[in-house]
Image (cartoon, rainbow, N blue to C red):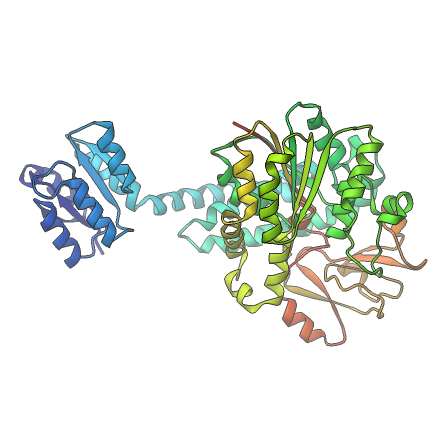
Length: 516
């Protein structure tokens, strides 16, 4: 089916060579010599694009543009004019034109304009697919090599880059290819973590990745030497792909100083990783040093209710006598109160804001059928996150701070992974409910299907009973009880979970920005 062009110009007869050129290229061109006739033709035929002369007698090009846009807001309209006056350009651009050309136009200019506005997606899609196909082999070879923790972060960045790029492609056939390569990478990544994790948490700082309990020391304390106020936002459950999806909202006001991936500790859940983040200690160390601030799996109450106190203790331990604030946003109304309080926080050297929405979205997707339908796959889940962010008090905070001379740090406690493979376990009534890790004294499972930690103290994890051990799900697995197994398997399949070992859960963003 050929592309239909409407060309409206009071000197349309003089453009006959251009029209013949386009028809020879396979385009179907309709012509009108005034705005009124152009509007009538647009009503009668579904055109793909309109070329519109700005300076016409009777109904002017700008007036025709406004009326056409009112009726057909998504129709691309290219304004063509002899004038280079800034006011005319601004008026046309303000009316949401697709392009702007200055007379006399050459046939190749018109052709380039058509390709840019009509074939752009197809051309970009083809180029993106070709580029990924060329890199696919190299990524596969890298995955099979013995990578270190930094190289695994680079692999994950590459995979997310291609996942997002191919997601915009019109060639849906590549979606399955990138998914398969990501699954393969996750399997190798899980083996890597199982081999290295105990060594990391017992190694000197230089021999391990930055993990939850070293983020404050390695990434935040150095920034506090700056005279600017520092705002640290911890957005619960923010994955790298979600950060890359909302990053464009920051580009007008902020410049990126660094975009790093750091590692969540295990279990990659709020109770463990976020307490570790603020305390600057592993969970077992928190339990021993600050027992009043640690709640175990079976204790009543919120497991993260002492984050502010742990942050205060951390700053004291490192001799940082700074004025700081801490806010935890759990709902929109409190978020708006924090927005209103931002002017009062500018005198603090450090302001920490924990924002919980993304984690709540993940849980809501599991429990609410309508959210499951809205976020049916990874792409839709990212899209829903972006839509929320754009209209959230969190974005209002970033916009307000974008006019101030500050340091802005954004990170998270853990990510989440979409699970689809149930792994059968048996546990007693005291076993915790998380689907990606279990702790208990009488767990029954197939050792090859999980990462087992029989001595929790070896990886600085607390235990309630002397015989307690931990097991962690890998890649896209989730742990389901043998009793009522089919119910668990069907209910939780294709939900987003966290606590185990995957790139999505453990490789988390730490972003440093500064206002322009």
